[in-house]
Length: 352
Image (cartoon, rainbow, N blue to C red; front, top):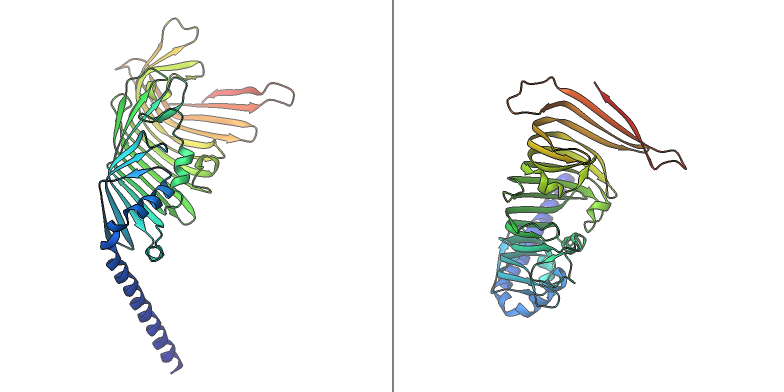
């Protein structure tokens, strides 16, 4: 009998919760048609969370899943002075905590941007800012992540980015079909990104990262990542940097890599890559080094006294159509110098 009374009590409690939820949801549904009357309040609250002046052509409200959702159409996000345009989007959807609506507050839970367009320029002095915004208002990933931290889930679909690198004198290029997914999951932050690349950069890029710590500064946390690039134009991604005295002038690569980072430093990396049409210029060389194809697996790890890099099943073809060579294993080890000595002392290079 006691068990039956307990079961009956639990059943009554569950029914009461369902009825209460229905009342709350029903009340919020009744409030949703009144949303357009409070555009001033919504604009002020949205600007407080996003940190920038927000304009839209039309606002609607609906119930989606667990949350009521504000749908802003024809959205323009301006810089703090209101003069320049930072972002335009066909839609911005804000999932709202329903309890906050009864208190006339806008507490966002989810954020979805549909078909946004962003234009960024890197000036000759290295500063990055939206094209239509004065250079004084710089584009900062740290500030962007800080603004997105209150949201449990952020999605971006169908985005386009126009990138103009004036620092290296490159023509503007357009990244399309950008998808971003940022969410909190089991105490960690998970970021997913994919994009169709302009021909000058390659074909496609996928990136996934997971870290614990502050959402506003992921590089200073500890985390793991996966990256996959298809048809990457190596000269554009290396941006003229020299590696071991060699500079990449041409070549394309397919790449898959897994790694970890901690406090802004790469800790470990492993993966595989295939590259074609490589041309490298080196100091003191009469002509560039040309490689028809190179492929293999790689692994990198940072240790307390230095780091090591290993290439496995490495195959190198200097000329197209050349007979295949036996795969090689290469290992490079660097150790830190003794106190009072040089900062870094070269280690050993072995060929197995």
